[in-house]
Length: 538
Image (tube, rainbow, N blue to C red; front, side):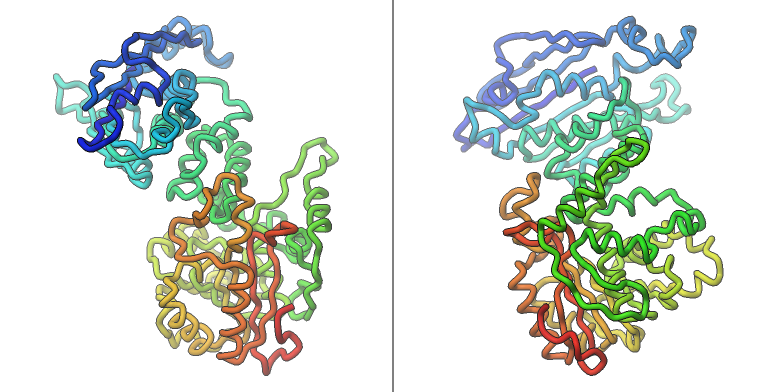
């Protein structure tokens, strides 16, 4: 089992290629061996010059040691314990060895060259045999979004019999200019993901390993749900925990990802409703809101202090009667709860979900029969197709199907089909629009469509410092064009409300920080003539 890492700095670089040895904490002049529970890991440098340096991790797997560590459920006569690809193909065993042998480099630490440890290096990584049951496309899907140029060549099942076709192994080559710590983290997580199997006992700390190794890239990865499920061997309790923790960086929807394989009928069983009125009320309290949430009622916003919010959140994580500690709802859940509460407060029945994405809010709107007509609009046909698949539109009861319409459209253009609705929702949408185009969006929504109410949620930029895994100055999502402070959001909302004849008030969503405020901010616009009691910022 072989992994090579080659560094070739540019001719004008101020450092030699052999500094790769400092970063890996392995001297290029020595051959080193590290005993593992299943074999021996060797580190050698086939070449080490100022212009080019290659470090190789060679893992010798002892089949007898593997048999000693077999699962108790595996029969003693199982040939799979003795005849397998583990000594030859890069898998979770190589990932474990990489984490053990290059632990300090994986954490990005180098006392001798701290500046170089934080520098993106020109790297080439080669693995001669990688189990990849999804084919070369799977390797490209997981590595390309991380900045790698991927070459994944399928290996023939038997070169002597080409008619047998290709095996599920690929020769993998990755090239890119990436920090060494990030490159090692990508391999540490994604090698077992491509293989689709773990070869050791899966403990609860696997979630911590995934979160640590995935810091800074996994939350924004387009295949994060698939990666998480395969890394955690589809152990649903661990998967849900991991996705909930990733959701703390705001843009990840763990509930949405976890529902991919669910059938719509099952999801809409009364006992499993995502957002009943009672559930919404409980979450709204946790999110920092109070007031009536039943459809058609009016309520005023009541401020909730950070201490009260913390108390409510602590109560939600106390041990239950069976001794199992319940996790607090994620920000994504609390955000949707706040939106649903606002819709019920204004008595909306016909609702537009503008920028509906992959249907997380649509799903919950359909649960509540009070919303008699639900329209999802998105510019991406891919997102709309995912929504159709996740909601299983072909299996919807007719009475539910006729309440839902999906439309493709850009929110910066007027659309006569969107006029005459009770309410429109822009949930985490405006920050994805280029600021020069915001005026067009404002007119298309508030001026042309002109619903009775508009609900807008967006990240609170001040709260970003609370997220430990979010680098300073970075947005929560790579596609964000901007992120507003509370003052900037208030200025924008009040200006829009005055221009188009709305009143506006503001609602914090999520657990408020005493200094930086809530993670999400919500503005509820209502037609001034319809609801004159909600003018100004509350």
